[in-house]
Image: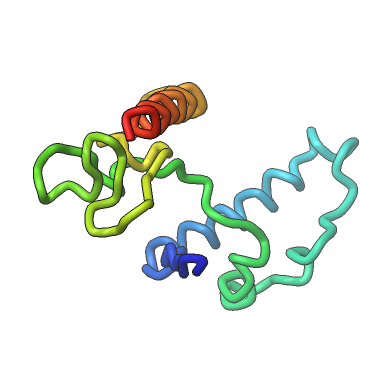
Length: 133
């Protein structure tokens, strides 16, 4: 069965207010005189939303988060880690995590290269386990 995932986006008031403020800031940015040659008018679903309540009610329709995930699936040899050193989810057969959530903290640069390195190592781990079975 497919997993049911609820990331709780905008579950906290500070997250909702930050997203509303960003939405309004982007509108102000688009109305700057220096951009008037390229931006004529706001279009799309968001153009109709004016109040904080309308913006908040439609945040997930307009987009998602812009955060890279890190530190949400700890990997380690101890039993308190969500993942073992082979990226297997403890207590769930046949499931591994292979993304930047296994990193304890975000890197200071782009997450693409670390994600690719994690994936390449995961492939090696999986292929090695398969060859040894």
